[in-house]
Image (cartoon, rainbow, N blue to C red; front, side):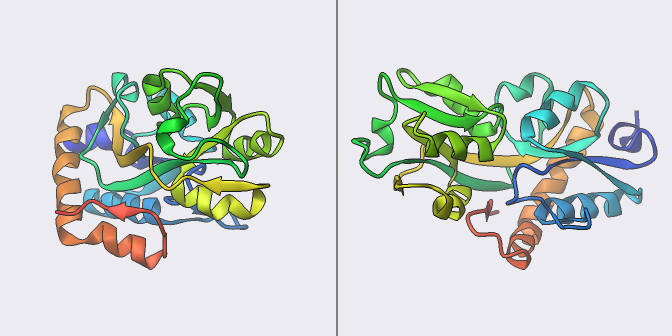
Length: 237
């Protein structure tokens, strides 16, 4: 099977776009998409000489769940082992720190303190960092929410002890949080890469090399700088 049959089987590149991560994708009032993910998908479509179509999803979990439904051909997702059951990933292209916000009067002073019995952590269901916490927490429990905004809400309602999120989003949201403080340390680094449904070996090999070229050429770093995205870092060659 040739490359286009696997990467653009309908003659167009259907890009699964996650609107829940504004570090990669932002949508303006007219519905137009902008951001690093748009630059990356546009470059891929250009290299393949095929039209580009954006297939939008509200949350990353929805993008991942649709990988078995022939809804998109390629997406940008956090690289995560449970997703790898249905999705193949390129090498990591970027990294983002994930951390916690706690209440101002909380006894939780360090990130390592958060994984304690009785501690409740708000996190959006099926976000990359929520999946990581699901597999790594030994004592604390996760209160899963539909999206990051819902996590903010229940934190303000003091239904949870901590709020998990990508650090840039947490910092950007501090003005919306009541009596909150950001813990200094990260609990993980989230790496994103190109994703596609399993079983497309020719396309997967192409994306492996494509990403390596994007990294070595500085394409990703330039895109991040152009869109002035703080907290999103390109993997270095």
